[in-house]
Length: 263
Length: 319
Image 1 (tube, rainbow over the protein chains, first blue to last red):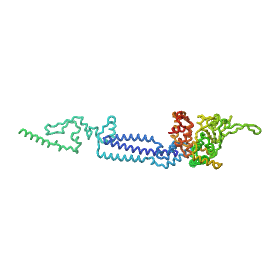
Image 2: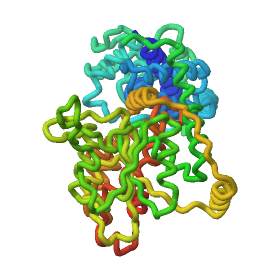
Image 3: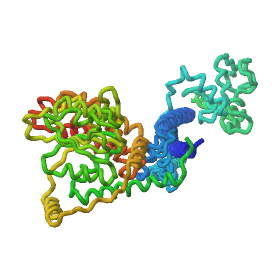
Image 4: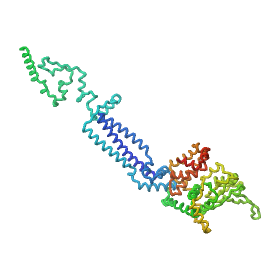
């Protein structure tokens, strides 16, 4: 390959690198902004990731297509017209063309890839990223949640959502829920509603038998399921459901009955 | 082609100095008129011809004679008159006695030179004009059954006077199209005129000019001119300008031919070479657009009525 062609390939490579950096920063800004919205409106995170990815791909493709030697010329006025002339005539083998290539190579030696960068733009983007990050962290700490997100894609994209949740380990902050009316905790709990729950309760309330449940629950102890296990804080002892509490109420009732009959 | 040596490439950089010296040398005889001198050099570098329009007494002959002298080229002058015959220009067969025998020998006309000044071309008959223009185009003349190649380089500078049109044969548009450039010579400024007066009234200057180029070097420069690279978008700009002359009916009745596109690019290349550049700039195209296009467009009635000149119209097209 001729040196001038190698030089143009190198310039192209440098431009792609700079475009990649710019597009990446723009995408990060978009990602953070969307993440902020997602956080406030309780949107799933995968929406943000997918939108950002699509944006990155489209922007990168469009920017790479727009790559032109003119961009380099704009940043380096001493190369104005000369660079594009050299590029358009890089296959020429005349003396004048070679003299031009020689000039271009000499001038390009003095051009650093840093000149292609728009530092003002770059710093603005970095500042925006910084500000958005700070806002995002603050809002996360404050737990701002304006509204629950009503998933408009629940129908067509529902399957994809489930799949995405599965592969991401349900990392979208709505673990174990299927919708706004879901029960938090073990989602299998919701299946209880499909069976009949029959409990025999003593009308005198003297001997409630919560173990006598016919056989709707997959578990033998519904309270155990409701409380999520032995260690959780549904303390039946202090709730009035203890045997002692029931006896005391019976005593009180007998007492009130005795008084009323005496009267 | 293998890559040229570094020395050859570096020699290209010296071209600007060479042309600066040539212009400075011509300027010893001609005060001012830098643009005109530059356009004459452009015509020579592009191996083309130029039509020069000016009032009498503006130094046309001195100018072209000086250019020929600096470039060490053979100069000849033809005065256009109504009785000028084609054979007066091309040459003719004359009877000559050799070894007791009478033979026809071709006597070369004034056209057999490198630089021709055809003064007042519009005073010559159309027949003579056609013979001259054919020679300009083909770089050869045919007399009888024989064809004679003209000297190289070959450059014709035809002049015409914008006033006093009586008894003239204005060049048809098709023939003016054969001139790459139409150069307009304007009057010098008052200061320049004082310098001219000083230069030509104090002493009789018989000193010749330095010969800075030669016929061979001109041919090499003509070759280099065509090699000057041009960017595609600038080429496109040149073609668009010419196309616009055909699509502006408000101002132009008849636009320029594709020969104008060739002329624009070629003249721009020559201008770039003289400027020491190895590429054509958009500014080159815009600068040469005036001399290349002004004689190739016919203004519309509306433009004529508005008092616009071809240069005004070209200026509007360039906007």
